[in-house]
Length: 219
Length: 219
DNA sequence: TAGCGAAAGTTATAGCTTCTAACTCAAGCG
DNA sequence: CGCTTGAGTTAGAAGCTATAACTTTCGCTA
Image 1: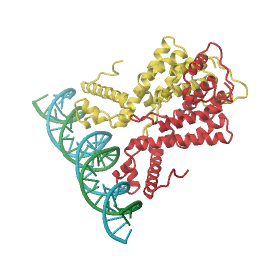
Image 2 (image 1 turned 180 degrees about the horizontal axis):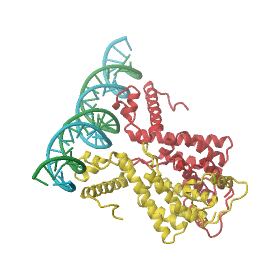
Image 3 (image 1 turned 90 degrees about the vertical axis):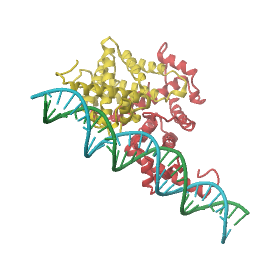
Image 4 (image 1 turned 180 degrees about the vertical axis):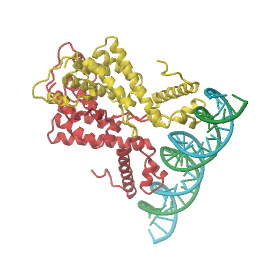
């Protein structure tokens, strides 16, 4: 997976610089968050003047977009790797938690407060769908019974008309519902833990995570 | 609850300007988010020069801290009002969702990506505890049965040693656990909805919310 | 009521940011 | 070997936070 075509030396050099910039950007994000990202500072740390970077990225937003895309790619790869080695929902969830804890700012770049001007391009939504697909695969193994005349049943029925986001995945509406539930619950836990909202409370966030995961495995 | 003591005209003027600044700040946050907040722009919109505002707020962070405090206060008041008019968990959750949808950026200011330098002062953690208290009150009405030998039971036991965040609330460990669960699940739903992660998916977020709420009412 | 002191608001300035414009230089391709 | 293209430079505009020094204005008190 090196290159799609024969690259000219110029193209190779360009790709290398872009990668180097992104490395520095991730480093900067990991310490100061996305709002602390500075093209100028990156340029200086790379030994060149500020405006030089504008040869490689049109503006700050394009760099951030690229980072978000790489972030989604990283999460999707992490989940794929876990799933390929036979991980069930519990394994996937723990892989996701480890991935999030490894770089909280990266998690927030994807799932935190939306960047004001930023609008997700098609490529990121495609990878996002890939992530959901892994989750859906893990969901079909979970027995989920809809009680009659419940909001849950109504939502599953509602999902029958709005399942295009599953991209043809052969899951029951109940499984789709459950995948959404898993997503929102895990995000709620991780988001609050990473933001430090559990900090003064004393309990072990991992135990709360495991407890919630138990319910997600046997609804 | 006008004033604690007799205020001098200077103090009254000062308080009025501070309030006016915060009004403009909220307006700015509602449109551009917290990262787009500019003391300079606020000053100009108020007809004075940039540095003038530094007489009223030591720096940008102090203004943001104040806004966060007011945000927590606003949410706590909303929940108190709902609880006082007899709302159960469903009512509280819907009040919270309405509050969040009314100003998504305000929600993210409290529960979104943490501000890099910012560290919550005691006053905000106190109001945060107040919010949790309302949730706990609603929890004691919900029957929650711990299955033997489960991660859930183990976490409830773990909470017996870490319940100081409940500030002496007479709830069972199971109720404490359930309050945490409610918090994280509602946050997961609201956070993803407000950030627009459900946008392309077509389903009605409120129906998913109601479905989750049904489970939270009868675990 | 006069005046004094503190607070409010001003401009100037430093230092940071993003980003454009114009220029120089070097690398690579024909 | 030369020409084109792209990389990197400096200069500069416009914005931001924040400080310093100065002026004005307000309100309390003697």
